[in-house]
Image (tube, rainbow, N blue to C red; front, side, top):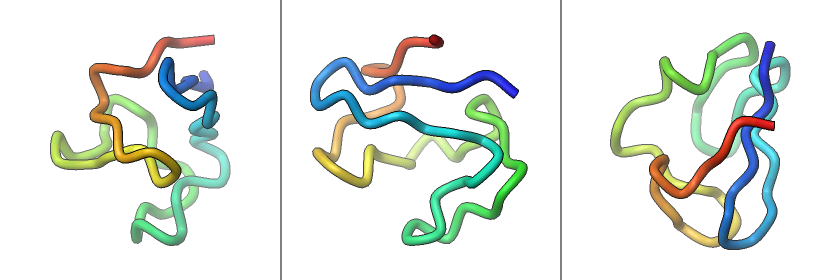
Length: 52
């Protein structure tokens, strides 16, 4: 699965681990994240992420 990097703080969203603190289970692709999901580090929206 593809990883995505926050352009603001550098956080890497890894679909293999999801975002446990945000109740996003492992295996959730970036595209499947809800539109309301935000970077758990800086609060940036999905539009601030770039595929790496």
